[in-house]
Length: 226
Ligand code: HEC
Ligand code: HEC
Image (cartoon, rainbow, N blue to C red; front, side, top):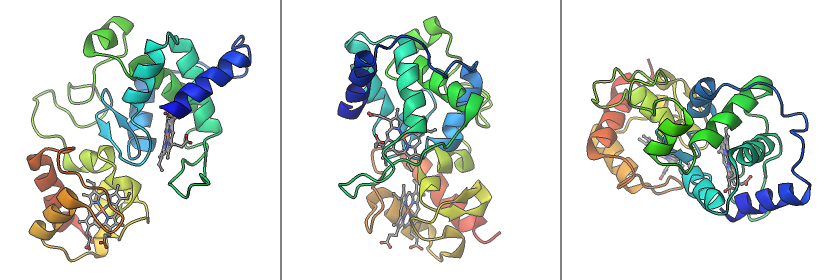
């Protein structure tokens, strides 16, 4: 949050006038899908249904910015600049954010999307026309509108697992944690690891529902190596 405010302050000092090369048309609805695929493994964003634990909670960061009176257009620029120029390797040794995860019009779509939804209530999403949130048949995941458990493969990405693990069935290719296609954990062991974390993995108890944790454990055990 402090970083977001610092970035906002920087923009204001810089004059904040033109859109300086960020003018490509962005689509909020495309941005949602792109966010889930490219950003959600590291960031919490309620509208997208993502819970990635690595980077700052974007709802918290931009709720604070909005309270300070920053407009949607300014937040959009901040997000776009973050995509272009993140802190890739923080001196603290904490995880950073890779640059240019999305490019060109895609980057603008993601920026437009985050600026529309981050730190806002459901009522504000509707008023601003940000589109339906994840899990309400919003076309991002397999949400059929029935309100059932989310598709575990989509959850593997949106919960942040795909930011650290290989699991072919979920299209995940990250190598921070062990390759789950090669793992021989049982369902019980997987549930315990997801709930408690440890060994470099964050704990997900309280962040995911018990039925979601069980669905992820089953996904890993039933799909690995296939
Ligand atoms: C590998 C994990 C990772 C991914 C993927 C990732 N981020 Fe980040 N993000 C971070 C970290 C870590 C920080 C804090 C360091 C920094 O400010 O660069 C951060 C910071 C941010 C910030 C600033 C928030 C604040 O409070 O200052 C924004 C905005 C942001 N990311 C948006 C995005 C968007 C949009 C995407 C997708 C295009 C994305 N991130 C993908 C890890 C990630
Ligand atoms: C920040 C990186 C990170 C994230 C995010 C993450 N993990 Fe992990 N995971 C790890 C690391 C590192 C280990 C190894 C822990 C150890 O060896 O003690 C691990 C271990 C595991 C194991 C045990 C594998 C084995 O063979 O012992 C499972 C299962 C697992 N993770 C599932 C998940 C699921 C499901 C999610 C999402 C809800 C997730 N992980 C999110 C880094 C991560």
